[in-house]
Image 1 (cartoon, rainbow, N blue to C red):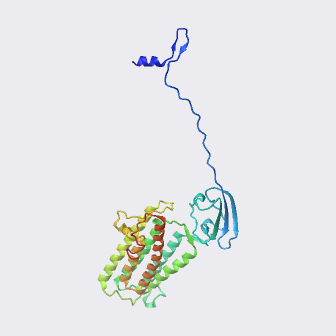
Image 2 (cartoon, helix red, strand yellow):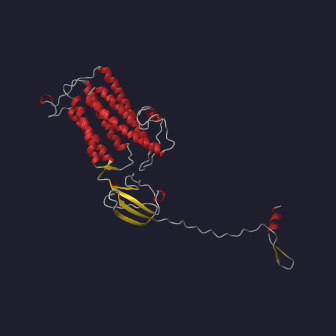
Image 3 (tube, helix red, strand yellow):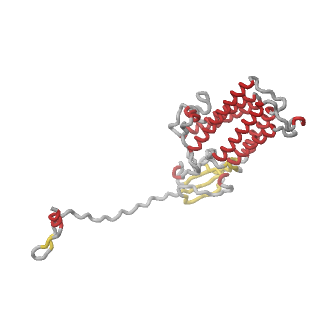
Length: 339
């Protein structure tokens, strides 16, 4: 059978020697490869104006889809390029073709002032309270009366408060070095003076009274101290858990933002109700420290910190709602169902 099929496909010779082609399947003709159409390249004309004076600073011709990096007067971290003089700064990953501009685009430049890295600011503002508090704890000279130089308190809650305060700021320093991933590399240099004044000043004020020779323990004694310690440690673990969860949302070297959700860690389940639970746990830690020391400066520091963290939490909450359409509406900024 196979032999017959093979013979049927072969050309046969006629009696006069001429070849006779038997009918068979048509041989497809080779098609010429289609020529690749070149995409039209769109170029932009970019004009840079001063955001305050509206003076023309520079003009860029034949710019591609990505706005090239350039130096007007300062290094890139100090520069802010905006679509509107009073608008937000453009991101590094923004593309010209995706911006609401025509082929002739006008941008506005603003000088952000001298910049300093976030890591440097955090390390400075956290190392200060740690060292300042220890100076009062060990009662170095020129703080209290000379007869109290390098003496120790007779109340064990004073020593416990020192351990808790030191633990808190050592934790913050280690998180700055090994946990936090910052979306912005720098901040204005003036912030380091403002932040250090806040943290260092309150640390000295609290430490002066807690370690004072005339300090009196909490009203309800050991029971109050143990309850406060439990609250403090619980919230410190919770705060660290939230920082780890937020870190895992952002790959190294990227600026991507995602909606944070609870993980297998029970301390992260508060994400179901709160947008910024790291601030919630931070507030709880200082409430516990206030209860432990029963000290007015600590309560003042907790109140001021709560007000500031509420401002930050509301800002982040609004940002989440604006950026993600499917963001959970049940969440509150910092306090579940309240604030």
